Amino acid sequence: MASASAVATQRRFALSSLLRRLRTTSSRTIWAMVAGGIIAMFLRYLQDLYRRFYRQEAESLWRRHVDLSVVQAVLLTTEHLKSLGRVEKRTLFVKPISEVFKNEFVLANVLSTAEKAVAKNEPFLVTQMSQEDKWHVLTTCTNHLSSCFAPYHVFFNEARRVESYYQSAWYVFTLTCAQTEASGRWFITPLKPVGKDDVGMLRIRIVMMNEQELREIASGAIEPPSFGFFNGRHESRWNTCQRFAELFERQLSRVSGQSDVGDAEWGPNLCGRLSQSHKKKAASNPLLAAQGDTTSPHYQADENCILRIHVPFPAGRAVMEKSDSQRRLEECVSKDVVLFE
Image (cartoon, rainbow, N blue to C red; front, top):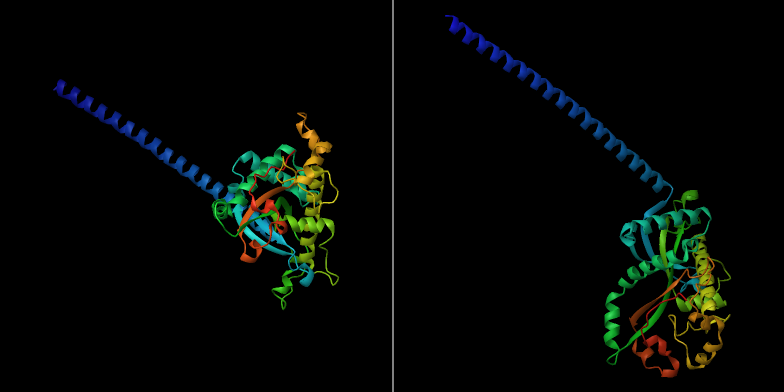
């Protein structure tokens, strides 16, 4: 009997210990589940708070017409300036800025420089960059612009081997960040004036123009019409063209050593081609002679803010049938473009 009682006691003790362990384990599990639920709710709350803040920030930027999340490449042309007082803007592409500038350091540099340029009311943000940063940023833009004309480069390369109608055009581009505050949308909604909110989008833009147009603007051959501009938006674009032409004239004068940019050449060691009459002058030109100097020259903020880009295109038969004296040889030859001295 005593032995049976001892066995029963041991069983009750074991069962009691097991129940205590189960209660302890269950209690810990419950507390762990409660704590996990609280943490999950807190993290969900933080996520919702971040999304709400992000939406409010995005809405605020949209209301203020600010969009620095993309880069827009545009072509400005004065083809209708004389007849209509318009400076046309053609969009070439719109890409996320993180796709254009994939390096995070370069991206942060471009955005901070854009904010600095806006604060100084300087639309050409490259003027606020160091010389080294200008080169890398503009070269990156060259790759994206050149890809717009990728098939034509291949066709042009093959067209040089046979009789064809392909020619070369030279364009110049730079980087801007500005917001047009002049009115312009009234033409689209004439019965519903926009009023003071009729402003453009503050956006980083790659602005490209034909080199010959820039030469003519710089020389005064292209000027605003006597009857004025189509509206304030086009006048603002003209101001951009004028500033662009100033940077172009400064750069070309620095490279060629000539004050008249109408016939100035870029030189054999840069991105243009010197004619035979200019080659003899090159040796006596202190600017070109100084290129052999290994010391790093000092550049002003307005220098090296542009780059040239070669754009081949199929021309008409009438253009190609002109005599050689009527066409520049450089228009039929593709050259590497390096603008820096």
